Length: 306
Image 1 (spheres, helix red, strand yellow):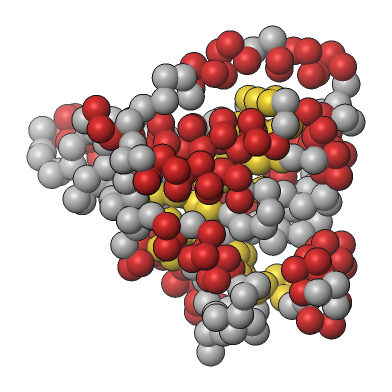
Image 2: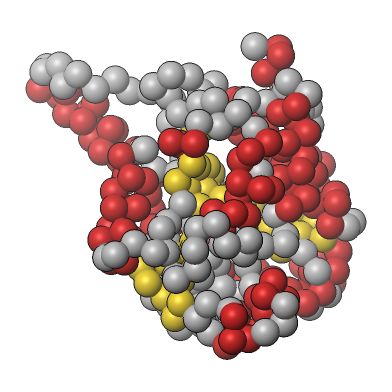
């Protein structure tokens, strides 16, 4: 687990955008080899999206061979509603880049059969080969996507009732009127994010080993595999206690973000304000590793060089 501490929101957003950019370019996506990205909504990732748009417009980054899966969507809110996550993603990100609309996957909160919609979403992720990089944000109560406190840490994509804390936090997007805030949402599960890519990796490995042992060509090649990575963006003093729970205390389903302590490749990216509840010793330790962490984003790669 890595904790990357930057001075402020802008620096944290830029670091995250650089990391995403480098991961996509290093993957060398192409026709038949898509990079798969899990994406969040809310106020926290906006700065990151702006930087990614900037890289794209400068010619440094293309999303032509990228598939995206958004992690949640409100139930009952029309797709064209200004506060739907469909509207959020298209207005703040997708319409500014060269992604194929068919490769941008967002749950349909108005589907006639919501469980079937959730099952289909899981299948699409599986068919895409899992998510290479999941980018998430959290709420003040430590929920990841809409996996509210008390959610199962092995949960899959499903219908979820929103906690009052989440409804209150989201009221600012609905003119402060609680009656306008949706009370239910579709969300990927913690388990969906945790294990999608590893399953594929293990199956390929087993198939390759089997073919070598018995001398039979299975038709499956052993290729360089990018293991699923999770990057969680946490900024602001109002999320400091959630970061404390995620980093310094144990795994607890009341703070679902804490589950990522058990993921082999988790990066928490935060600003100084978000560290206010952490021990001084913890902050000093991770700041002492910044020279290592910064090698992940420096140099910043460009598709112009390929």
